[in-house]
Length: 432
Image 1 (cartoon, rainbow, N blue to C red):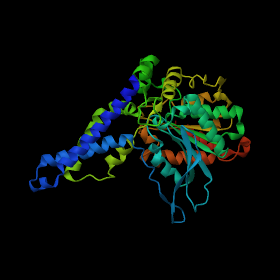
Image 2 (cartoon, rainbow, N blue to C red; image 1 turned 180 degrees about the vertical axis):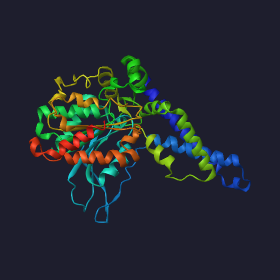
Image 3 (cartoon, helix red, strand yellow; image 1 turned 180 degrees about the horizontal axis):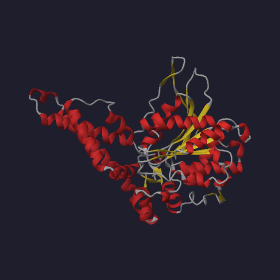
Image 4 (cartoon, rainbow, N blue to C red; image 1 turned 30 degrees about the vertical axis):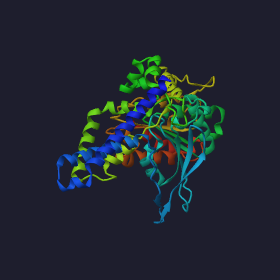
Protein backbone atom coordinates (compact mmCIF):
# COMPACT_ATOMS: atom_id res chain seq x y z
CA UNK A 1 0.00 0.00 0.00
CA UNK A 2 2.87 2.39 0.74
CA UNK A 3 4.11 2.15 -2.84
CA UNK A 4 0.60 2.53 -4.28
CA UNK A 5 0.07 5.66 -2.16
CA UNK A 6 3.34 7.11 -3.44
CA UNK A 7 2.35 6.39 -7.04
CA UNK A 8 -1.00 8.10 -6.55
CA UNK A 9 0.71 11.04 -4.81
CA UNK A 10 2.90 11.63 -7.88
CA UNK A 11 -0.17 11.55 -10.10
CA UNK A 12 -1.97 13.91 -7.70
CA UNK A 13 0.89 16.41 -7.90
CA UNK A 14 0.92 16.21 -11.69
CA UNK A 15 -2.85 16.64 -11.84
CA UNK A 16 -2.72 19.59 -9.42
CA UNK A 17 -0.13 21.41 -11.51
CA UNK A 18 -2.22 20.83 -14.61
CA UNK A 19 -5.25 22.25 -12.78
CA UNK A 20 -3.28 25.26 -11.56
CA UNK A 21 -2.21 26.02 -15.10
CA UNK A 22 -5.76 25.69 -16.42
CA UNK A 23 -7.09 27.88 -13.59
CA UNK A 24 -4.51 30.60 -14.18
CA UNK A 25 -5.26 30.59 -17.91
CA UNK A 26 -9.01 30.79 -17.35
CA UNK A 27 -8.78 33.52 -14.72
CA UNK A 28 -6.34 35.71 -16.63
CA UNK A 29 -8.36 35.32 -19.83
CA UNK A 30 -11.65 36.48 -18.27
CA UNK A 31 -13.21 38.77 -20.90
CA UNK A 32 -13.94 41.67 -18.59
CA UNK A 33 -10.20 42.11 -17.91
CA UNK A 34 -9.69 43.12 -21.55
CA UNK A 35 -11.26 46.47 -20.68
CA UNK A 36 -8.16 47.34 -18.65
CA UNK A 37 -5.09 45.80 -20.38
CA UNK A 38 -2.47 44.58 -17.93
CA UNK A 39 0.84 42.94 -18.93
CA UNK A 40 0.78 40.88 -15.73
CA UNK A 41 -2.47 39.22 -16.82
CA UNK A 42 -0.96 38.40 -20.22
CA UNK A 43 2.01 36.79 -18.50
CA UNK A 44 -0.29 34.90 -16.11
CA UNK A 45 -2.34 33.55 -19.01
CA UNK A 46 0.82 32.52 -20.84
CA UNK A 47 2.19 30.78 -17.74
CA UNK A 48 -1.11 28.96 -17.32
CA UNK A 49 -1.25 27.83 -20.94
CA UNK A 50 2.30 26.47 -20.93
CA UNK A 51 1.91 24.85 -17.50
CA UNK A 52 -1.38 23.13 -18.33
CA UNK A 53 -0.04 21.74 -21.59
CA UNK A 54 3.21 20.63 -19.95
CA UNK A 55 1.60 18.52 -17.25
CA UNK A 56 -1.27 17.28 -19.39
CA UNK A 57 0.93 15.65 -22.00
CA UNK A 58 2.86 13.66 -19.40
CA UNK A 59 0.06 11.08 -19.34
CA UNK A 60 -1.06 11.16 -22.96
CA UNK A 61 0.35 8.80 -25.56
CA UNK A 62 1.30 10.89 -28.61
CA UNK A 63 -0.28 10.11 -31.94
CA UNK A 64 2.00 8.90 -34.72
CA UNK A 65 0.64 11.68 -36.92
CA UNK A 66 1.64 9.86 -40.12
CA UNK A 67 -1.56 9.87 -42.15
CA UNK A 68 -0.57 10.49 -45.77
CA UNK A 69 2.48 9.83 -47.86
CA UNK A 70 3.46 11.07 -51.33
CA UNK A 71 4.78 8.16 -53.37
CA UNK A 72 7.02 8.21 -56.42
CA UNK A 73 3.93 8.35 -58.65
CA UNK A 74 3.31 11.86 -57.29
CA UNK A 75 0.05 10.87 -55.62
CA UNK A 76 -0.78 11.10 -51.93
CA UNK A 77 -1.56 7.75 -50.35
CA UNK A 78 -3.11 7.16 -46.95
CA UNK A 79 -0.95 5.47 -44.33
CA UNK A 80 -2.63 2.91 -42.12
CA UNK A 81 -1.13 1.36 -39.00
CA UNK A 82 -1.76 -2.37 -38.86
CA UNK A 83 -1.01 -4.68 -35.94
CA UNK A 84 0.97 -7.67 -37.20
CA UNK A 85 1.56 -9.28 -33.81
CA UNK A 86 -0.37 -8.41 -30.64
CA UNK A 87 1.07 -9.17 -27.22
CA UNK A 88 0.27 -7.93 -23.69
CA UNK A 89 3.44 -5.86 -23.34
CA UNK A 90 3.92 -4.75 -26.93
CA UNK A 91 2.80 -5.12 -30.53
CA UNK A 92 4.57 -5.30 -33.86
CA UNK A 93 2.93 -2.71 -36.10
CA UNK A 94 3.23 -2.06 -39.83
CA UNK A 95 2.96 1.31 -41.53
CA UNK A 96 1.08 0.19 -44.62
CA UNK A 97 0.69 2.40 -47.68
CA UNK A 98 -2.31 1.10 -49.67
CA UNK A 99 -1.94 1.53 -53.40
CA UNK A 100 1.84 1.50 -53.32
CA UNK A 101 3.84 -1.42 -54.61
CA UNK A 102 5.51 -3.35 -51.75
CA UNK A 103 9.01 -2.04 -51.20
CA UNK A 104 11.97 -4.41 -51.39
CA UNK A 105 13.45 -3.21 -48.11
CA UNK A 106 11.55 -4.58 -45.11
CA UNK A 107 12.77 -2.76 -42.01
CA UNK A 108 11.92 -3.65 -38.42
CA UNK A 109 12.62 -0.73 -36.06
CA UNK A 110 13.15 -1.86 -32.48
CA UNK A 111 11.98 1.06 -30.35
CA UNK A 112 13.39 1.68 -26.88
CA UNK A 113 11.49 0.74 -23.74
CA UNK A 114 13.16 3.40 -21.65
CA UNK A 115 10.35 5.64 -20.48
CA UNK A 116 9.14 7.04 -23.80
CA UNK A 117 6.67 5.65 -26.30
CA UNK A 118 7.71 4.24 -29.66
CA UNK A 119 6.41 7.49 -31.21
CA UNK A 120 9.79 8.93 -30.24
CA UNK A 121 10.89 7.39 -33.54
CA UNK A 122 8.25 9.24 -35.56
CA UNK A 123 10.75 11.18 -37.69
CA UNK A 124 12.82 8.01 -38.15
CA UNK A 125 9.76 6.18 -39.45
CA UNK A 126 8.88 9.04 -41.80
CA UNK A 127 12.36 9.10 -43.28
CA UNK A 128 12.44 5.34 -43.85
CA UNK A 129 8.88 5.11 -45.14
CA UNK A 130 10.00 6.76 -48.38
CA UNK A 131 11.84 3.66 -49.60
CA UNK A 132 11.02 0.92 -47.09
CA UNK A 133 8.24 -1.19 -45.66
CA UNK A 134 8.47 -0.10 -42.03
CA UNK A 135 7.56 -2.19 -38.99
CA UNK A 136 7.95 -0.94 -35.40
CA UNK A 137 7.85 -2.54 -31.95
CA UNK A 138 5.14 -0.60 -30.13
CA UNK A 139 5.63 -1.15 -26.38
CA UNK A 140 2.72 -0.63 -23.99
CA UNK A 141 2.49 1.48 -20.86
CA UNK A 142 2.94 -0.94 -17.95
CA UNK A 143 0.31 0.80 -15.84
CA UNK A 144 -2.32 -0.30 -18.38
CA UNK A 145 -1.31 -3.98 -18.31
CA UNK A 146 -3.20 -6.14 -15.77
CA UNK A 147 -1.16 -8.06 -13.21
CA UNK A 148 -2.67 -11.25 -14.66
CA UNK A 149 -0.49 -10.73 -17.78
CA UNK A 150 2.52 -11.80 -15.69
CA UNK A 151 6.06 -10.46 -15.52
CA UNK A 152 8.20 -8.91 -18.22
CA UNK A 153 11.99 -8.79 -17.82
CA UNK A 154 14.95 -8.65 -20.19
CA UNK A 155 14.55 -12.31 -21.11
CA UNK A 156 10.88 -11.83 -21.97
CA UNK A 157 11.78 -8.71 -23.96
CA UNK A 158 14.36 -10.69 -25.94
CA UNK A 159 11.88 -13.48 -26.65
CA UNK A 160 9.37 -10.91 -27.89
CA UNK A 161 12.01 -9.74 -30.39
CA UNK A 162 12.67 -13.34 -31.39
CA UNK A 163 8.98 -13.86 -32.13
CA UNK A 164 8.74 -10.58 -34.03
CA UNK A 165 11.74 -11.54 -36.19
CA UNK A 166 10.21 -14.95 -36.88
CA UNK A 167 7.00 -13.27 -37.95
CA UNK A 168 8.90 -10.92 -40.26
CA UNK A 169 10.91 -13.69 -41.90
CA UNK A 170 14.51 -13.81 -43.18
CA UNK A 171 14.19 -10.95 -45.71
CA UNK A 172 14.22 -8.43 -42.88
CA UNK A 173 16.58 -5.65 -41.87
CA UNK A 174 16.50 -4.90 -38.16
CA UNK A 175 17.43 -1.48 -36.76
CA UNK A 176 17.66 -1.23 -32.96
CA UNK A 177 17.73 2.26 -31.46
CA UNK A 178 19.53 2.86 -28.16
CA UNK A 179 18.34 0.77 -25.18
CA UNK A 180 17.25 -2.38 -27.10
CA UNK A 181 20.56 -2.74 -28.97
CA UNK A 182 22.14 -5.35 -26.62
CA UNK A 183 18.94 -7.40 -26.36
CA UNK A 184 18.39 -7.23 -30.13
CA UNK A 185 21.92 -8.54 -30.60
CA UNK A 186 21.11 -11.36 -28.17
CA UNK A 187 17.84 -12.14 -29.98
CA UNK A 188 19.70 -12.39 -33.29
CA UNK A 189 22.27 -14.74 -31.75
CA UNK A 190 19.46 -16.82 -30.24
CA UNK A 191 17.91 -17.27 -33.68
CA UNK A 192 21.30 -17.95 -35.27
CA UNK A 193 21.68 -20.98 -33.04
CA UNK A 194 18.13 -22.30 -32.68
CA UNK A 195 16.28 -21.09 -35.78
CA UNK A 196 18.80 -19.90 -38.40
CA UNK A 197 16.17 -19.72 -41.15
CA UNK A 198 14.45 -16.88 -39.26
CA UNK A 199 17.52 -14.65 -38.97
CA UNK A 200 17.33 -11.17 -40.49
CA UNK A 201 19.60 -10.15 -43.35
CA UNK A 202 21.15 -7.22 -41.49
CA UNK A 203 21.29 -5.83 -37.98
CA UNK A 204 21.99 -2.13 -37.38
CA UNK A 205 22.65 -1.06 -33.80
CA UNK A 206 22.30 2.67 -33.13
CA UNK A 207 23.74 4.19 -29.96
CA UNK A 208 23.16 1.18 -27.73
CA UNK A 209 24.96 0.16 -24.50
CA UNK A 210 26.49 -3.11 -25.69
CA UNK A 211 29.43 -2.56 -23.32
CA UNK A 212 28.58 0.26 -20.87
CA UNK A 213 32.08 0.13 -19.38
CA UNK A 214 33.75 0.82 -22.73
CA UNK A 215 33.11 4.54 -22.29
CA UNK A 216 31.32 5.40 -19.03
CA UNK A 217 28.71 8.18 -18.83
CA UNK A 218 26.55 9.60 -16.06
CA UNK A 219 23.96 6.93 -16.89
CA UNK A 220 26.39 4.03 -16.49
CA UNK A 221 28.02 5.61 -13.43
CA UNK A 222 24.61 5.80 -11.76
CA UNK A 223 24.14 2.08 -12.31
CA UNK A 224 27.47 1.46 -10.62
CA UNK A 225 26.94 3.77 -7.65
CA UNK A 226 23.64 2.39 -6.37
CA UNK A 227 22.82 -1.10 -5.15
CA UNK A 228 19.88 -3.11 -6.44
CA UNK A 229 18.25 -2.77 -3.03
CA UNK A 230 18.51 1.01 -3.20
CA UNK A 231 17.03 1.05 -6.69
CA UNK A 232 14.09 -1.11 -5.70
CA UNK A 233 13.43 0.97 -2.60
CA UNK A 234 13.62 4.39 -4.26
CA UNK A 235 12.52 3.82 -7.85
CA UNK A 236 9.84 1.14 -7.80
CA UNK A 237 6.17 1.89 -7.10
CA UNK A 238 2.90 0.00 -7.46
CA UNK A 239 0.29 1.26 -9.89
CA UNK A 240 -2.65 3.02 -8.25
CA UNK A 241 -6.30 2.05 -8.27
CA UNK A 242 -7.43 4.14 -11.23
CA UNK A 243 -5.47 2.16 -13.84
CA UNK A 244 -5.90 -1.31 -15.37
CA UNK A 245 -2.52 -2.40 -14.04
CA UNK A 246 -3.47 -1.69 -10.41
CA UNK A 247 -0.95 -3.34 -8.10
CA UNK A 248 1.70 -3.95 -10.78
CA UNK A 249 5.23 -2.98 -9.75
CA UNK A 250 6.62 -0.37 -12.15
CA UNK A 251 9.36 2.17 -12.63
CA UNK A 252 7.08 5.22 -13.09
CA UNK A 253 7.52 7.33 -16.18
CA UNK A 254 7.30 10.48 -14.06
CA UNK A 255 10.39 9.40 -12.11
CA UNK A 256 12.20 8.65 -15.36
CA UNK A 257 11.20 12.05 -16.71
CA UNK A 258 12.55 13.73 -13.58
CA UNK A 259 15.93 12.07 -14.15
CA UNK A 260 15.90 13.10 -17.84
CA UNK A 261 15.18 16.72 -16.96
CA UNK A 262 17.78 16.83 -14.17
CA UNK A 263 20.54 15.95 -16.64
CA UNK A 264 19.98 19.25 -18.49
CA UNK A 265 17.86 21.21 -16.01
CA UNK A 266 19.15 24.67 -16.94
CA UNK A 267 18.45 24.14 -20.63
CA UNK A 268 14.89 22.96 -19.94
CA UNK A 269 14.18 25.85 -17.55
CA UNK A 270 15.38 28.33 -20.16
CA UNK A 271 13.27 26.63 -22.86
CA UNK A 272 10.09 26.93 -20.79
CA UNK A 273 10.81 30.50 -19.69
CA UNK A 274 11.34 31.51 -23.31
CA UNK A 275 8.15 29.72 -24.37
CA UNK A 276 6.09 31.56 -21.76
CA UNK A 277 7.39 34.88 -23.09
CA UNK A 278 6.62 33.83 -26.68
CA UNK A 279 3.06 32.92 -25.69
CA UNK A 280 2.65 36.24 -23.87
CA UNK A 281 3.80 38.10 -27.00
CA UNK A 282 1.53 36.04 -29.24
CA UNK A 283 4.47 34.51 -31.12
CA UNK A 284 3.86 30.85 -30.20
CA UNK A 285 1.73 28.32 -32.06
CA UNK A 286 0.33 24.89 -31.38
CA UNK A 287 3.01 23.16 -33.47
CA UNK A 288 5.99 25.45 -32.97
CA UNK A 289 9.43 23.88 -32.36
CA UNK A 290 9.02 23.99 -28.56
CA UNK A 291 5.68 22.18 -28.58
CA UNK A 292 6.74 19.67 -31.21
CA UNK A 293 9.73 18.66 -29.09
CA UNK A 294 8.15 18.67 -25.65
CA UNK A 295 4.89 17.04 -26.73
CA UNK A 296 7.03 13.95 -27.32
CA UNK A 297 9.72 14.45 -24.69
CA UNK A 298 7.29 14.86 -21.80
CA UNK A 299 5.02 11.96 -22.81
CA UNK A 300 6.32 9.15 -20.61
CA UNK A 301 5.25 5.61 -19.86
CA UNK A 302 5.81 3.27 -16.93
CA UNK A 303 8.19 0.32 -17.31
CA UNK A 304 7.62 -3.06 -15.66
CA UNK A 305 9.73 -3.11 -12.50
CA UNK A 306 11.33 -6.45 -13.35
CA UNK A 307 12.40 -5.14 -16.76
CA UNK A 308 13.98 -2.01 -15.33
CA UNK A 309 15.74 -3.83 -12.49
CA UNK A 310 17.00 -6.70 -14.65
CA UNK A 311 18.31 -4.21 -17.23
CA UNK A 312 20.38 -2.43 -14.58
CA UNK A 313 21.52 -5.65 -12.91
CA UNK A 314 22.31 -7.75 -15.98
CA UNK A 315 23.17 -5.28 -18.76
CA UNK A 316 24.87 -2.48 -16.82
CA UNK A 317 26.16 -4.06 -13.62
CA UNK A 318 26.69 -7.68 -14.68
CA UNK A 319 27.72 -6.78 -18.27
CA UNK A 320 26.21 -10.06 -19.44
CA UNK A 321 26.02 -8.96 -23.07
CA UNK A 322 29.49 -7.37 -23.04
CA UNK A 323 30.95 -10.58 -21.57
CA UNK A 324 28.85 -12.84 -23.81
CA UNK A 325 27.28 -14.47 -20.76
CA UNK A 326 23.60 -13.66 -21.35
CA UNK A 327 21.12 -16.49 -20.74
CA UNK A 328 17.46 -16.97 -21.63
CA UNK A 329 15.56 -19.43 -19.46
CA UNK A 330 18.82 -21.19 -18.61
CA UNK A 331 20.07 -21.32 -22.22
CA UNK A 332 23.35 -19.46 -22.80
CA UNK A 333 23.16 -17.17 -25.80
CA UNK A 334 26.44 -17.19 -27.73
CA UNK A 335 26.82 -14.05 -29.84
CA UNK A 336 29.61 -15.82 -31.71
CA UNK A 337 26.91 -17.97 -33.35
CA UNK A 338 26.05 -15.07 -35.64
CA UNK A 339 27.81 -16.02 -38.86
CA UNK A 340 25.87 -14.55 -41.80
CA UNK A 341 23.87 -11.57 -40.50
CA UNK A 342 25.65 -8.36 -41.50
CA UNK A 343 26.08 -6.13 -38.42
CA UNK A 344 26.57 -2.37 -38.43
CA UNK A 345 26.96 0.01 -35.48
CA UNK A 346 26.26 3.74 -35.43
CA UNK A 347 27.46 6.12 -32.72
CA UNK A 348 27.35 9.85 -32.04
CA UNK A 349 30.53 11.70 -31.15
CA UNK A 350 28.63 13.88 -28.63
CA UNK A 351 26.35 11.18 -27.24
CA UNK A 352 26.22 11.67 -23.47
CA UNK A 353 23.96 8.65 -22.84
CA UNK A 354 25.62 5.87 -24.85
CA UNK A 355 29.06 7.30 -25.48
CA UNK A 356 31.24 6.28 -28.46
CA UNK A 357 32.77 2.88 -27.83
CA UNK A 358 29.77 1.33 -26.09
CA UNK A 359 27.94 0.29 -29.26
CA UNK A 360 30.84 -0.60 -31.55
CA UNK A 361 31.83 -3.22 -28.96
CA UNK A 362 29.22 -5.45 -30.61
CA UNK A 363 31.51 -6.13 -33.55
CA UNK A 364 34.20 -7.67 -31.34
CA UNK A 365 31.58 -10.01 -29.84
CA UNK A 366 30.60 -11.30 -33.30
CA UNK A 367 33.59 -13.65 -33.47
CA UNK A 368 31.89 -15.93 -36.00
CA UNK A 369 31.14 -13.13 -38.43
CA UNK A 370 33.63 -12.38 -41.23
CA UNK A 371 35.04 -8.86 -41.33
CA UNK A 372 33.35 -8.11 -44.64
CA UNK A 373 29.99 -8.36 -42.88
CA UNK A 374 30.91 -5.88 -40.16
CA UNK A 375 30.62 -2.11 -40.41
CA UNK A 376 30.69 0.87 -38.07
CA UNK A 377 30.12 4.60 -38.36
CA UNK A 378 30.74 7.54 -36.03
CA UNK A 379 28.85 10.80 -36.61
CA UNK A 380 31.23 13.31 -34.98
CA UNK A 381 28.84 16.14 -34.14
CA UNK A 382 25.70 14.13 -33.28
CA UNK A 383 24.27 13.74 -29.79
CA UNK A 384 22.12 10.86 -28.62
CA UNK A 385 18.91 11.90 -30.40
CA UNK A 386 20.75 13.16 -33.45
CA UNK A 387 21.87 9.69 -34.50
CA UNK A 388 18.31 8.54 -35.20
CA UNK A 389 16.44 11.83 -35.74
CA UNK A 390 17.17 15.26 -37.13
CA UNK A 391 19.68 16.52 -39.66
CA UNK A 392 22.53 14.13 -38.86
CA UNK A 393 20.24 11.15 -39.32
CA UNK A 394 18.59 12.42 -42.50
CA UNK A 395 21.67 13.70 -44.31
CA UNK A 396 24.46 11.39 -43.17
CA UNK A 397 23.41 8.31 -41.24
CA UNK A 398 20.23 7.25 -43.03
CA UNK A 399 21.88 7.06 -46.51
CA UNK A 400 24.70 4.93 -45.08
CA UNK A 401 22.24 2.59 -43.35
CA UNK A 402 20.25 2.15 -46.56
CA UNK A 403 23.46 1.48 -48.53
CA UNK A 404 24.41 -1.11 -45.92
CA UNK A 405 20.99 -2.75 -46.25
CA UNK A 406 21.22 -2.83 -50.05
CA UNK A 407 24.74 -4.23 -49.99
CA UNK A 408 23.61 -7.15 -47.85
CA UNK A 409 20.07 -7.76 -49.10
CA UNK A 410 20.67 -10.89 -51.17
CA UNK A 411 21.10 -14.30 -49.50
CA UNK A 412 24.63 -15.28 -48.53
CA UNK A 413 26.83 -16.38 -51.41
CA UNK A 414 30.51 -17.23 -51.94
CA UNK A 415 32.77 -14.23 -51.47
CA UNK A 416 34.04 -14.34 -55.06
CA UNK A 417 30.49 -13.84 -56.33
CA UNK A 418 29.69 -11.03 -53.89
CA UNK A 419 32.29 -8.26 -54.21
CA UNK A 420 29.87 -5.36 -53.69
CA UNK A 421 28.83 -6.07 -50.05
CA UNK A 422 32.44 -6.62 -49.06
CA UNK A 423 33.57 -3.30 -50.50
CA UNK A 424 30.62 -1.38 -49.11
CA UNK A 425 31.00 -2.77 -45.62
CA UNK A 426 34.72 -2.24 -45.52
CA UNK A 427 34.28 1.37 -46.54
CA UNK A 428 31.72 1.94 -43.81
CA UNK A 429 33.87 0.29 -41.18
CA UNK A 430 36.68 2.67 -42.02
CA UNK A 431 34.54 5.58 -40.85
CA UNK A 432 34.13 4.19 -37.35
